[in-house]
Image (cartoon, rainbow over all chains, first blue to last red):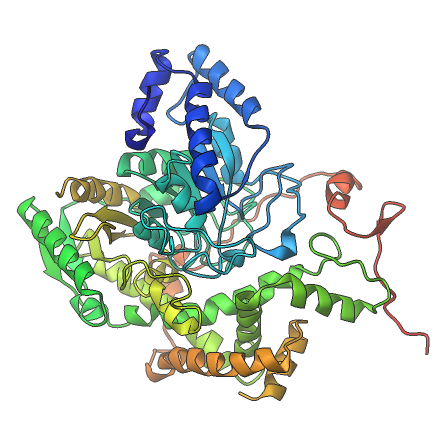
Length: 472
Length: 100
């Protein structure tokens, strides 16, 4: 019997190749777990009914000796990634009946490797939230402590891995939506460099910031998953060529920068304790530690709350219920009333709020002060990071300012919820890659330690990630 | 922000905001905008031009692909598969103009 709680991709690959276990046996173990745990946790919105087809494809690949690391790996995908013929709802009533008419590039890359996609996972509606509480399909509970939120917006993807409902999962990160739930559920979460993973077939929230990435139990699995999806794709015009990516690869010199000014206030005591312990251990492990100054970077979240709602109000204008999506089919209304009826009732409260906010930010008289200023700051913050990475290889900071919270605790104050992304938003604003690694403290729930690296230097994150994993 | 302003913004994005929702939304918007306003307090060199740096591609990537050759109707079935109201394989909408 395989202990799926302690399984990793390379071990599973070995077990398959040595014929010690079949894909069906492994997938059945996960399905059994989902049957027991999902009614309470609600990580999965749907377990697909065509799993057997993909189990067979994977087993054939293995039997023919054509398997790769991901062949036969049970995978969960966030409910905003299109998989042809399957419902994809983005956690919204607006898309409750939407069947994907094509397959997203990321899902296709995974299918090409022979993964078994178990199902789609719960998320904040259109990825707007940090707790998975804004989903139209109920909350998801944190498998480590079911009285706490799993984080968000990829809360279902994190919970699916944490409850052993999949070996790895995929989420999307616009302001922290992979790294923050990974931190809350004691997992590894990677937000790759903007422009390395195709967004074709990802339901857009904020197109200039969205990026798909993996959630896993360890750094090795995250690396394998990232390598499988970071291909070039002509369907996403914002992807950077492999040549350019290679040009920006740097040598790793074990130099860590810590932006002390940024993290000195408002961070949970327990988190700072574990963070300082981590820094100390890395120092003992031969890393050079430097204090660095990033004066503009703390403005990233404010910049994020200008650019993101502006893009949200534009991107979500496509949801009109005419070509697809929620439509009560009241033909007595005129067209404008029908639009308003569909959008008012199809979108939840947080989505309505961000559409209104975006509409305000882009309106005449405010556009210059908000949007144009934010665009300038985005460039200046990006430059600040580029310069910082001339002197250090890694910037280290906590993933979140606070530990996982109770349900409803931040629902009355949107701003309090938004601040959960304080340390993750800079990675999206500047486009650099970031990874959250769990480090055990005194609490039951580990603390997420975040490492950031220069554009296209994900390898540096995997290297330091493995060193952080060794800390006891 | 006033109720009238919220209603107007709602019209622009085609979302109806009830008086009740607006009572909650106004203080929310004020606190969010208050937070965002910190970007007004920093001076940024408006001549800042990232395009001059070696890293310019990081700021503006837009790789266009060649047009593909498709025939009219190639994707009709896929496209129509999700249409909520259709007739004779056409998308149906309520009347747009009033006769009166």
